[in-house]
Image (tube, rainbow, N blue to C red; front, side, top):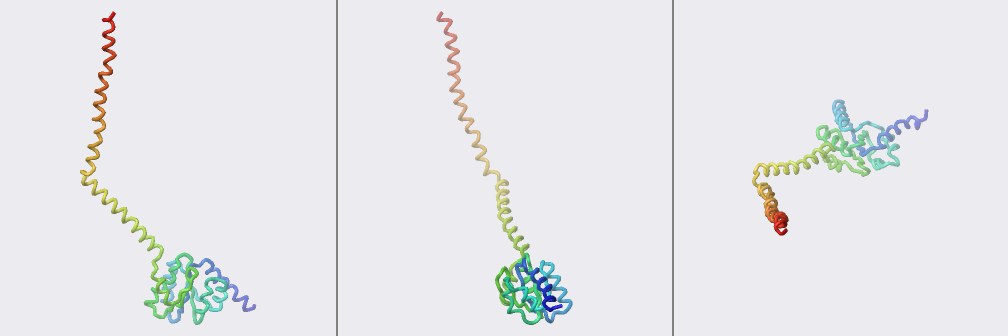
Amino acid sequence: MAKVELKQPVVNEISEKIKDAQAVVLVDHRGLTVAQDTELRKKLREEGVTYKVYKNTMMNFAFQGTDFEQLKDLLNGPSAMAVSESDPAAPARVLYEFAKKAKALEIKGGVIEGRFYDAAAMSEIAAIPSKEVLLSRLLGSMQSPIANFARVINQIAEKGGEAAPAEEAAPAPAEEAAPAETAEAPAAEAPAAEAAEAPAAE
């Protein structure tokens, strides 16, 4: 079987992984212990990130014609690929945090949402909170004004006196209407008086 035929399934596998990827980050994993490698894979998996070691030539073939072709200059030495389809910052965030205690892990760089970032810029990407954290912060900021508004309403309700003038003013129109009814009363009695005088005239 030709070498190209042997390589093609691997290239296809990589192509499938990066097809809908929001981020691809390359690392040099040399020096990691088996326990560290296992822990890293677990942490990445928890964040929805796939992680696998591939030959540079295989990745180079798969990256051609895609945004990830920008990584070709990093394809030297042992390389592992971390891929995320949902959270663009997840690979950088997990890898950067893990590298703080596992000094052997070297972040080479990555392409995030179509843009290339070198190893130095990865730390900035790693500082971006996860979507869950951002949503939690957003929800908290939305609830804060509502809580303040409810607190103000409760304070007004407890005082009670501020709403009283409006309630006392309500009967005023009824009092004004009373004289109008009194004024109409004589007019209603007038025809009766005329009727009483009519027989006398006869």
